[in-house]
Length: 311
Image 1 (tube, rainbow, N blue to C red):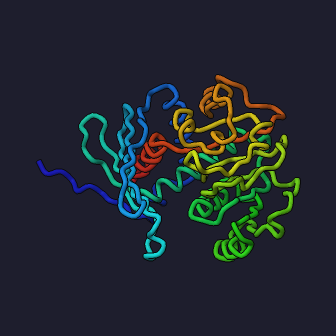
Image 2 (image 1 turned 180 degrees about the horizontal axis):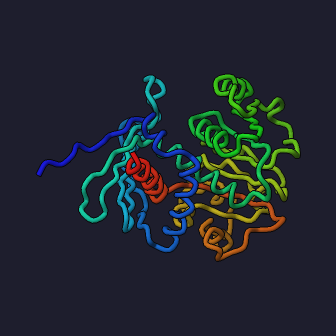
Image 3 (image 1 turned 90 degrees about the vertical axis):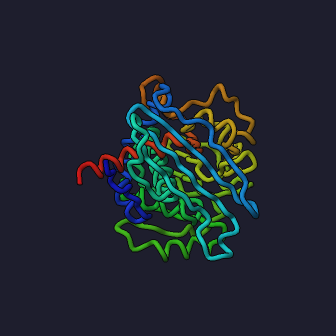
């Protein structure tokens, strides 16, 4: 019996298959499935490559689908004129093990990460956000800008870079959208009260946001993914209700929380809110830390499978 050729989708095609609105809905389901152990997503395997690079193996399985994300992260690629991340996400039939399709790995990672932040906004923001601050000017900042444009098109977006010129260049390159994108004129000054959502998207080892907690301002940490990295400072964390996307992974990877010495007994998963096991904090500042896991890649593959089935 001749099997059909496995479809392999490049970055542009992968992006079309997993729009942000559908990803947010799929992640809401996946976070609950994962918390209820309906998705198996073991700790990722990290294997060294040359010159400080790493190979990451991240499988996840559910009764309806299985996936394996295999990506290579090579920090030296910038000097070569190459992307830092290469890889693929393979989707499999959970009964037969047959390969269903293959998606572009960096695109899946970027879009599902931004969608998880948007799920955090929809879950924890007291009102529909009107002004965002993105701290960072890299690929994840662009993914988040795209997600905000799709889901919150009436919002204004401020951008803060490691230097003012970086923020200005980012806004010049990606402005002109239907919504407003501006560099932060005084990056070292306190933020205006009108900013209601802050999203940190850097690999900094020093806090890039450490303001006093404020009710009505949601702070999301995305970029720091090792114990040595920290974006959100201890002052912000100490006075806030703390939530994470993956409680198991956060204890090893959420450098912001690790360096602040948080009591993990007081850190809740977002699934507790989404499954109505805990109330949404009222009038309490919230910090939501996202570290990612393969269960979120499985959610993206669910979206892609649905899109492909309707073609």
